Image (cartoon, rainbow, N blue to C red; front, side, top):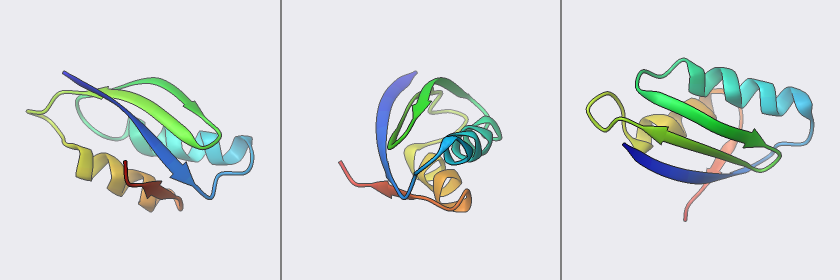
Length: 68
């Protein structure tokens, strides 16, 4: 398992947090530790998904992951 904190632009309310959480929950092998305004902390099984797919789920939810 790999644990990362992804910074996210464009979040401004509780709906944003919920949208990102739902997007991350849809990915296999992802454990969500926290989603808050501007970031998400997750662990993921590299055999099931990767950081690019996590960032893609955030984009699909309508927000922009910020490169580390």
